[in-house]
Amino acid sequence: MSSTTSPRTAAPGPTSGREAAADLEAVPLRHWGRWAAAAVVLYVTAAFAWSLARNPNLEWDVVADYLFEDFVVRGVGITLMLTVVAMGIGTVGGIVVAVMRLSSNPVLRGLSWFYTWFFRGTPLLVQIIFWGFLAALYQQIEIGIPFTDVTFASFDTNAVVGPMTAAILALSLNEVAYAAEIVRGGIASVDGGQDDAASALGMTRSQAMRTITLPQAMRVIVPPMGNETVTMLKSTALVSVIGGKDLLTAVQSVYAQNYQVIPLLVVAVIWYLALTSVLSVGQYFVERRYGKGHGNASMSRRWLGLGVTR
Amino acid sequence: MTASPAPAPAPGPGTTVTPMVEAVGVRKSFGRTEVLKGIDLTVRPGEVTCLIGPSGSGKSTFLRCINHLETIDGGRLSVNGHLVGYRQKGDRLHELKPREVAAKRREIGMVFQRFNLFPHLTAEQNIMHAPVLVRGEPKKAARARAAELLDRVGLAGREHHYPAQLSGGQQQRVAIARALAMQPPLMLFDEPTSALDPELVGEVLDVMKGLASEGMTMVVVTHEMGFAKEVADSVYFMDDGVVVESGTPTDLLDHARHERTQAFLSKVL
Image (tube, rainbow over all chains, first blue to last red; front, top):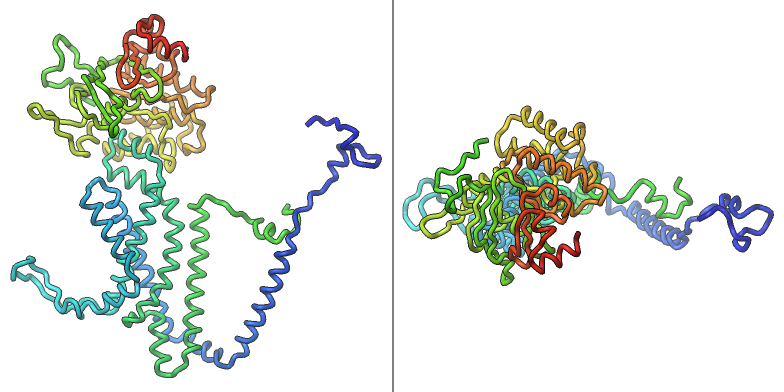
């Protein structure tokens, strides 16, 4: 645009067009609807909170008593341990199953496909119960040569696979299947030219996978794995059906005796929320590091249309 | 690096030097489409050979066959006297294991149209990576040579830049340095300047000219006729999966005998 303005576009008044334009202020769109919606939501939330606070059945004093009880804290510890162990095994196993799925070996591909099909195709709860009742399927676990009577060692199933082992097995094996799909997507997102370049330099397939493809796939893999961790933390509650000693099992065993069901469940809810909140904060930072970096500090201000963000 | 000539009988009668690349009747199909219909080509050590031709003519596919990034369906293809990707037993060719193929590829450097630098590694790490990982070179020595190679391609001081922080021309020069780090006796270039902005083409071609003048054996798929004319020892014109004609740059580019060659050259010169 040249600086000369035609008389037609000049603002009325003595100022010239250019000066008038410089004084103009851009007013962002005001979102009145959002303010109205926020008011309604606030009102309903306040009403609900009020009714909760005054509900004697919640027994906040009981909640406060139990929140840091030994058995509760121990349950939280077990829940965290289950989450960490299952995610650890799940991630490593997921990478193995994903690499098998992308292998040129049809046997490995088939195995990997079958594994994912089976563990994603059955409910986690059913898998947990299955592992919990493993002894009903195999009373003895024997190590020997199949189809012969030769046995090197024999164990009582219930002695080897207790509730904790069953819980870890069930959660890990299930997570392997989901992690495998995430890893596979991540590997597929890496440009094929990277493999060409690695091959042309004389790298073997495993060298290329370890040092070139997987590090790049991490950008795509890490954010959904954060999600998986939050989901896993909550899924650990399922092992209460086989007495997995986790947080939910702990509060259940107490309210089964003293009938303080609601306050003890509130204790569990507070802990779960606290743990998932911590994980979400962690995930935010991880995503900021690996993700594409959309979203910025001024986002919340723009959302409410709070004037110019400068 | 001892790329000694094979003790096996050299293919072809009367040749005294083992050709760096020798292709005889190389065929290749993708599904039902035959993309290479019997390619014959010979590159002697120290020679620069340019492959030209319209897109889809099979020249890039042929280049990728030379280091077994693509398998071939028939014919003989040998590099430095050794079959590429196969072992001959009697009258059969047995495909080599991936590990053996990987070992052979170390002797062949390759530069790609889209650079294919490793984006998560710095320029220096891109160059050091294969020598350290594949050859087990000590890191210190590899780092020193990376600096040397970066200097050679005119990028001294860019050791710690990531590919995204470099221009296209700079990335391609790092890619050349990366390939050279394995000290290959043969370099393949797959349209190395086609993805570059016009003003960046020169810097890459200059590096390639430097390599050629130092006696590097090179096979170059290119649309840069000026480069072919100035640097190449021989030029092959490919169209529709066959070598239509070949010769010295002057013979082929100025005095093309074949109609298809003339038609192509009239469009690009």
